[in-house]
Length: 438
Ligand SMILES: Nc1ncnc2c1ncn2[C@@H]1O[C@H](COP(=O)(O)OP(=O)(O)OP(=O)(O)O)[C@@H](O)[C@H]1O
Ligand SMILES: [Mg+2]
Image (cartoon, rainbow, N blue to C red; front, side, top):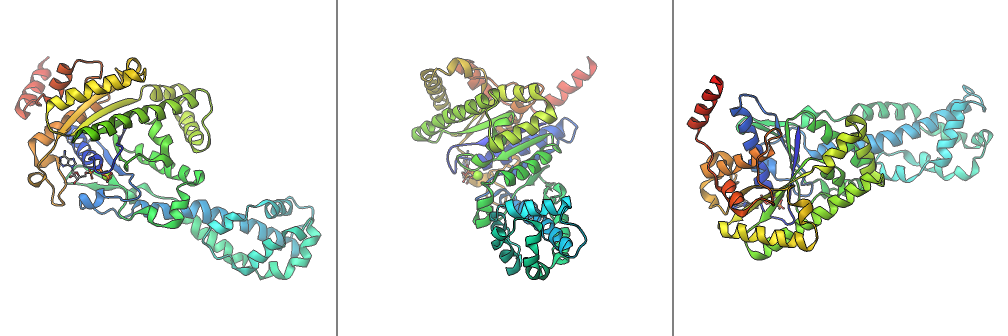
C-alpha cells in the first residue's frame, strides 16, 4: 500500500488537477497489468472540496457527514454517557437501590465533582435547566448525604430519556467506510471527500483543533488507506497542519512545482525548504521520543500496529517527488534544477537530500479547451501526451521498481527521463510476449 500526498505552497498551481490524473494513471496501470489496482483519491481540502464536482460524481456521504458522525462520538456520546452515570448513580442512591458506601455512587460523585463543564457547552444536546442547576450546586455536595437536599432537582431529570438518547447516538457514531467510498466506473478509481465546505460550520472549525476529534478522523483515514493499494491525498494550499502527523508519516510526498514564471519557481523552492524543515523537526522529535499531543498519539498507534523499526524506516526513507507543472520549455527545468541544487547547497542540505529528492514528472502548460472532461478539468484519457506524462508519474510511485532520477543525476538524464515517450501499446504487448518465452 502506498499513500501519496500531493502538496504545494499556493492555490491554483494544479494540485487537484494532478491528483486526479495521477489517480487515473495508477488505476490504468493496474488495469494494464491485469490486476485491478484499488486506487482511492481523498479530497483533503476541507475548506473548499472540489473533486466530486470536477468529476461529477457525488458520494452518498461526504466528509461533512463524517464530521457529524464523529462529533456524535466525541461530544454527544461521551458527554451524555458521563451525565447518565452521574444522574443514574444519584437517583439509585436516593431511591435506596445503592448505599452511601457503594463504589458506583463514589464514581458518580467523583465524576460530578471533577467533570469539566465545558464538555456540556461543546455538546449540542439539550440537557435541560435541571441539569445546569445540578452542576451549579456542586459546591454544596461533599458527601452522599448532601445529595438529599438536591432530590427535587435530580428527580426531575429524565434518566430513562437520557439512556434512550445515548443508545441512539452510540448507534450512529461509527462511520462505515463503504458509505463514503464512491467508485467511479468511468475512471477506474474511487473518491472520498466532500462537497460542502466543512470549515463553513463553526462547530466543525472548533473541532478540527481538538486532538481527540482529529484522532478519530485519522483513524477513519487509516482504515480507508488499509482498503486500497494506492491512496492519493489532494491537499489544500499550504498543507494540512491539523493532520500533520499523517502527512509526516506517509511514504510519498509529491510537491507540485509551479513553473509558470520566475516568482512562482521561487515560491516553490521556498516551499521545498519549509517542507524539509518541517519533516526534519518531526523526525527529530520522533527519534528523541518528544512528539506530543496528536502527533504522539498517532505515531504510537502506528508503532503498535507496524512495529517501531518499520515506522522509523518509513519516516527515514520518505520519498520526496517533484512534479513540474505549467512548464513552458525544457530550459526552464534545467534552470530550476540548478537553482534548487544551489539553494539546498547554501542550506547545507544538498548532500543529504540529493538522492531522495526525485524528479517524478512534468506537465506542460496545456491549452485546456481541447482536453478536458465535461466539467472543464484537464483529463487523463482525453489527451495522449497528458496520459504519457501521468503514466510516468505513476511509474515513479511503483513500489517494486521505482525508476525516477534524483537530484544527484545529471540534467541530461533527468530531461531524458521527463521527455521519454512510453512504448506504444503494441511494443509493450510484444515485450510481454517475449518475456513469457523466457
Ligand atoms: N498544466 C496545466 N496547464 C493548464 N492549466 C492547468 C494546468 N495545471 C492546472 N491547470 C488549471 O489551473 C486551475 C487550477 O488548478 P487546480 O485546481 O488543480 O489547482 P490547486 O492547486 O488544486 O488549487 P487550490 O489550491 O485552489 O486547490 C484549473 O483550472 C486547472 O485546470
Ligand atoms: Mg485543489
